[in-house]
Image (cartoon, rainbow, N blue to C red):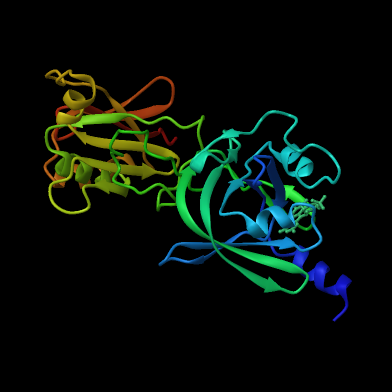
Length: 312
Ligand SMILES: Cc1cc2nc3c(=O)[nH]c(=O)nc-3n(C[C@H](O)[C@H](O)[C@H](O)COP(=O)(O)O)c2cc1C
């Protein structure tokens, strides 16, 4: 097998773009760009990264006790280039600061995985560093991908996990890390939370309008949070207690917001809703701007406009 054929074929394999960092025994930071990063085991949680035995950073990494994998995100190609450049001070830009386990990390990384060194394996002209995952951080920044010798980032509609804020329960009940939700990444993402007395019933109502459940907390028993999605629209139905525990304000009586839902066929949707005994607030009415709109009530007393285009 010749090297060119091998590397040409491997260029077709998308890889993550990471910068792996550590401190040497002298306290000097070391780092290199790595595309060979992947997970290796779930239990125990192990990851793997391969480092060229001839690299200037090899002595530091093959003897270190800890390392941090910074998963680079959209707009961080320059960092990837810098940590792959020989003979420069890769940390001179000052964009790395102490992060997980106190190791040098990029605050704006897409994710960070902090590891203790589990084992060092011989892998031809490379050394495979197996790390035991000790701490992780996940942000909403779209990760960079390297394929066909170019940097890319996935289209915006990929799952964008967020870490729960420190000391606050994650209302979705998700662990930090990829989940089943399919949301555009922050900062463009925004969605309403409906404070509902009857979370389950309210979520079922929105399911009738074409929303599907994406997340739930707690996983079993009476839900206090149900995340829903319809196309690119997100919505969360949250128990009324949430407002009290988070903001100290009980939700007031009466309508608290109006949801506007466009549907293909208003009559069919209304039939589905009213068959489920959803109260009709206002019969379908043609609007001068070309929409036919009806209003119904959700189980928590909020008006919901259901609309379609007026067909000639
Ligand atoms: C996208 C990309 C991915 C890379 N992946 C790896 C890798 O997985 N392992 C590795 O040893 N070097 C990898 N490199 C090369 C190193 O980042 C770096 O260029 C090399 O270690 C430089 O050697 P030096 O430290 O001796 O200057 C990669 C470089 C780029 C641009």
